[in-house]
Image 1 (cartoon, rainbow, N blue to C red):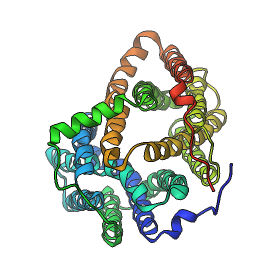
Image 2 (cartoon, helix red, strand yellow):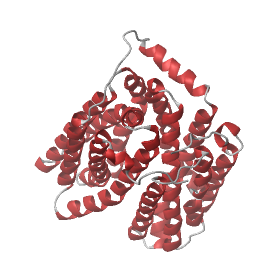
Image 3 (spheres, one colour):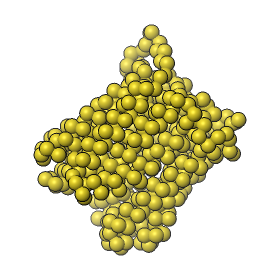
Image 4 (tube, helix red, strand yellow):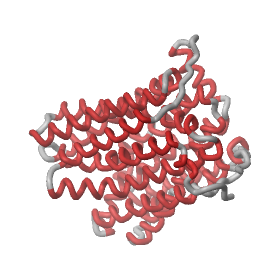
Length: 404
């Protein structure tokens, strides 16, 4: 169902400023992984790259639940502003350090940990702040625009970083990432949102427990969180084994880059579709869309051509975008604002907690049973998870309010 103007959400001054800042930081954040890897490899090893990435991921996962509680206790705009100031300093510091010399491994890891800490407090507050800026009618559009911003950044950022690294230095790409965070800082500083916190507050632990309790009384919420906890761990098979298949059968890095770029392009189109399409059963549509997600995994298993796998990856990008917009909008509509950051943190935590395990074991498993069998098993279990969720009435029967 279509409703309203395409860009109604951008008519809101606060959201418009927020969107500008997020679009800039998304491009920078997509540049960082490419630049960081080459900066580490300039004087280090592949193992060092793993240590640096882990240094950022571990504090992110560990502190997400803390960030969720804090996001429900304080002004979310202020919390996000402080998180981006921290990330601006970390990226500018690291970029300048790379340009001036070769940072030691502990330097990369320390500044990476600061980025993870900032993300742990920023992400739960992000889910909660959008409905504070937009009316219910514009809420889905706002989430769709945020998705388009992220997907566009995922296309532009890596390509731009590759050019900068090739022509100049990884340090410049990291510095530019820091400057994009600075754009977000300025944008958030200009956003004006009233915040009225209760004078009497429960303790931190009590609020954390309340979030846990509220998670489990919403069947649709915990079912999908558990689904994606496993789903994301299995999807690691594509990103770990996909480059191996590309190198063996598809022509190498160029083909793999095409496949990933196709996914990003599909995600942009999915976001555009969600600007106007408002399903009455959002989680049914979102879950049905994820049936497409394992297709590239199966095509990699059977060594399809790069073009065919790229086409499936494009459809996967659309499906993930549709899911993401419907999921975020449903959470924002169904969960009271005073609980939103905590429940978002549990969602983020569930989505990320098994991912490192999946990435760690998929390689050894494929060494025992083979790449083809590993990919087929992962894709099949993903389909099975979707089938199970489609049997849960709390998910399939949940209705969105009628749009004007």
